Length: 136
Image (cartoon, rainbow, N blue to C red):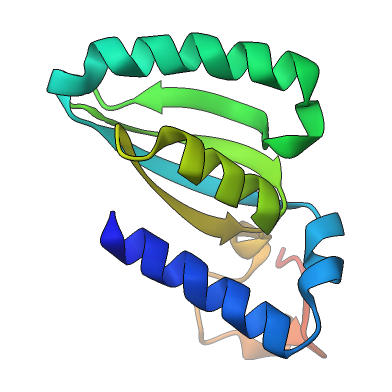
């Protein structure tokens, strides 16, 4: 958990120094959230989940919106979920669940990789001017 806090603080510091903090508060992106729950904390996690639902009904703009999931890995206390959020919302969610759930967030984007030519030998129909060209 210390690693996540360190990354979060560095992101915040960089945004303040570059004057982008207000801009990043408004922009929403997709994030893949990976989480891990210790089975000893399961009772507390269920309590906090009920509390979070109540809080989100009152203040929906303070926390991320779930786009997909949550999904768990069978037999493990791990899982993932996709959120639409900004960094402030992720910060709120991470602080809410600490220390019961260890969360990590990775920004994700839509990709058209499957449209690219799988064979590198046909480069004339591959990527031109940074655009993906479907290969037929």
